[in-house]
Length: 264
Ligand SMILES: Nc1ncnc2c1ncn2[C@@H]1O[C@H](COP(=O)(O)OP(=O)(O)OP(=O)(O)O)[C@@H](O)[C@H]1O
Ligand SMILES: [Mg+2]
Image (cartoon, rainbow, N blue to C red; front, side, top):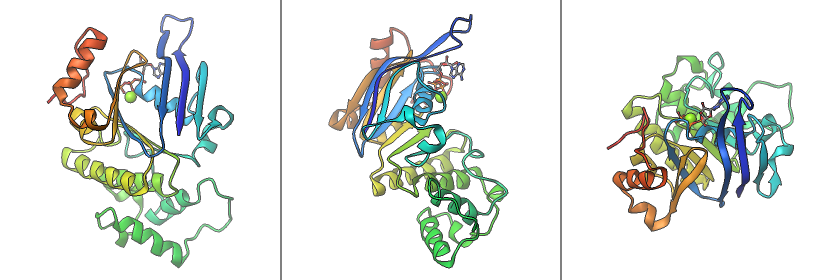
């Protein structure tokens, strides 16, 4: 369970560029919840995920994962508990390493280091099985360099790597935004499949309102560093994109403006 309590974050404090990105935010996510996050540009969505991942500390407030105070763990140690996939397909995998080497790296994350870098037959069989679930034919290309793959294939592998060790929390920040629409849909379907099969507790930022409604079992809308709308269950299933615009209008007093939002 993730608990964010009275967390604030201001960038460039005391300068003309001062920006309160997160403003006394409270959020509790129960185990197994799949939460989609929407909001306009600069609403604080990525900042929220970065605070949880430990990219930088909050100015105040507490972030707990399974009742453990995360501030005691630096970013690289949180990686054992938190899986992440970002917008940029180049970020999650090492281009000049083979698919199986990338997988081995993810599988050994947080475990004791070993000098042995090769992958055993048993490990290769396991990776093959896992890659086959993606349905992209990558199980026959274990020794291909990841740099040769398409953006969608790399994002799918990053997703698989992020979920290999069943993280306590999965953070997705617009991880399909850089892909063409057909590949994006495929990776998103895979995301849904992996999250459901492993019952992963997930926070997924998206600019696509239809995806935010269609996927997950809870939706939160952010504005000016705060959560302005939080909906789950049947009420979420019944939402329409127009409802979301109306909610935004009510809470923010303006139209939801966003250069990447899919408005239909
Ligand atoms: N590292 C940083 N240094 C300075 N300002 C930052 C930093 N990160 C974010 N900000 C500012 O904080 C605010 C919130 O940014 P954030 O990236 O969280 O928004 P977002 O909701 O993810 O927006 P988008 O939909 O455009 O990705 C913005 O005004 C942004 O310019
Ligand atoms: Mg962002």
